[in-house]
Length: 433
Image (cartoon, rainbow, N blue to C red):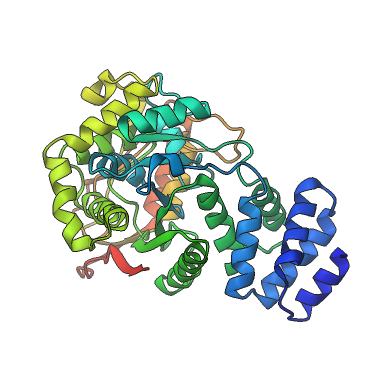
C-alpha cells in the first residue's frame, strides 16, 4: 500500500477503505508518512469530503493512535460532556457535579484554554491545591468512591489528532467538517464514556458562526459517535454573547459555585440545567423533561454543590475556597467601563471580549504562556439590556495596569447600541440525537 495511491484516490473523489485510512493514520503518527503527503491528504479531504463510514473509520483510527481509557469497570452510566468552545463557558464546573449527584459516573478529561476560549483545566487549577494530573489508579479510585473526577488530558491521548490538527492549522484545511468532527469525537471515544453530550456552540464567540453550520457539525459528530457504539446527544447553544457574567478563571469558578447554590446569571443557569438534563436522560434512558426536575432538585438540595466540594477535596484542592469564594485572591487593579450613550445593547462580539480577557492576562496565545488566574472581565450589562450614558457596562481585572486601555477599547468597540429594544436571544437552538 502506498500513500501516493491513497492521496490520488481521495483527490479523485474515491471512497477510502478502512485499511487505507488506518494505514494513513498509523503511518503519520509514527512519522513514516511525511508532512507533505499528510497535508496533501487533508487537502484532498477538504475538497472531496468523506462518507459517514470513512469519517467514522478516521475517528476510530485517531482514537486508537494513543491511550484509550476503559471505563467499563465503572458501569454503564459513564457520561462525558464536551463543548466546542466559547467565552465564559464554565458549564462543566456546574453540570459535572449535578450529573454525579444524580447517579451518573463522570470520569472526565478536559483541556486547557487557547486563544479566546477558556479551558476547564485552567479554571480548576485556579483553586489552590487542586491537582489536574492523577495517576490511573488514583483517578479510577476517586470515581468509584465519589462518582466524579475531572483531570487534564493524557499526553498520549489521540497523538494522531495532535499532529493532524497542527498540520491543518498551517495548511488552510481546518474548516473541513469530517476533519473537525473526527478531531473532536476521537478524543471523546478515547476518554471511554458510554454517554456523550456535546455542547455545540455557535455565534461570534464560537468556531461555528451560524446555527446552520453548528447543526451540520452536530449531526456529523452524533452520527460518528452512534456508529462507534456510543450514546450521543448534541445541544446547539448560542455563543454570540458570553455565557454568564464572568470571564476569567477564578471569576468563572465563583460564578459556577453561585449556580450550584441556586443563584447565578439566568442564561448560565438555563443552559446548565438543560445540558445536565440531557446527561441524566442519556444515562437513565428517559426524556429531558423527566430529568429536569431531578436536576433542579440536585441543586436546591445542595447535593450538586457537595459533589463539587467532594471532588475538589479529593483532588487536593482547598475546599475553604469553595465554601467561601471571597477567600480567592483579587487582581491588583480593577477598572469600570462606562457606557458612552443611552440605548439598548443590541450585540456584543463574544470573540472580541474573549480576546480582551486574554489581553488582561486571563488566557494564553500559546500553550506555553502563563495565566493570571485572577484576571478577567465582569459584564455588568449584556445584549438586550437597557443602558444610560455613564452606566457601568463592564469591570476589568488585571495585575498589569498598562493592559487596561487596550481591553477597554476592544470591549467598547465590539458593543452595538440602538434606541430600539432587540429581540430576546435564543439560548438553545436545537437538540440532535
